[in-house]
Image (tube, rainbow, N blue to C red; front, side, top):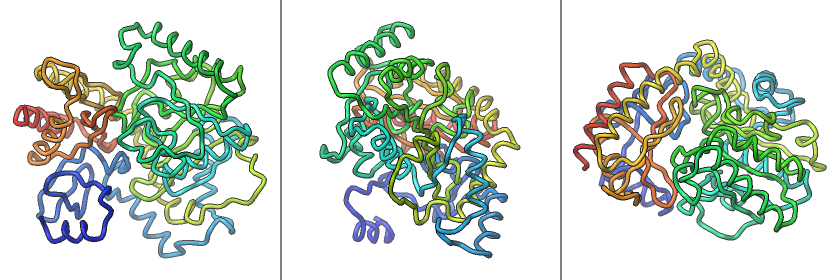
Length: 427
């Protein structure tokens, strides 16, 4: 155990998990690479849990942060804040939500917490519909709507949560159905559920489940849900903390794969927009956002420094068409990984969109999750110079692949080759 690791253990909670048998200290990064304290370079295929969205040490972002910090770091939401207004204007327009209002927070957890406050207040109901296998953050309310027991440390809750089928296409009681039949069965399940309960405040859903292992339903499921929700007056919250900003390649927001019945009532975002700076937020229709009848602020949400970073990062993303790059390079990468998976008995499925890819590992010859294999491949990939993430439903057996959206084709090929070797050596 290193000296820093010992110090970490001595002052940190036991539940604050670290990756790797010999935990990694990352000291600096550039582009799609990071370096550890021993000077070893790694190709980063996880981006600080999908947070380093464009590139490490992106000059445009570091310059914006440095210049703003040299002027003023904090003033609070009690004063006008030009960078915050400018970023809110851009996000409101991009969101697709009519008469949008934007509230900034410091994290995705806080953003989802705010969305729940808005929905329950607007609807005068503490019932929430959530998806099985979901993850929405670590606050008391966010944990209570998380449908993944590995990330839900208590059953106590300020909300009554009802879980709906549909977030996982290839497992569960409807996995054998065609896409159309799958959607019909999930809609019927939702209709039946609503027939047995008081009217809920909202459905919250990740268009692509992040911690759950990059699972998703067929396109159009949430649009079909929306028809049912609208009849009951139930709001739709799209948790875009991991899927937003073009990561899926095909769409700027994950909800756009289910857009037939319009945008969500509430959209939450975080992670990638700050490229490592702490930004989260909520977009909602004006009547929903304005439903609170008491004062509310976020002391550090909308900080001039983080807003300057977000503006610079969003401008870079759009000007360099990183969504298009995610579609092109991600398409190549997922095909390479599917070819690699086809040659391995322990790979059940390679799924995802753009640069949001999951590789699910199982015990050979079965559909049984294999978290030990996932841990072993994670270690082997690190030895080969590649950083990955882990996730999954009943067991953490999915390798999560989500590099910065500026990933090049040679880097995608390099990462796929390292992962192929890691699968061989760990198997």
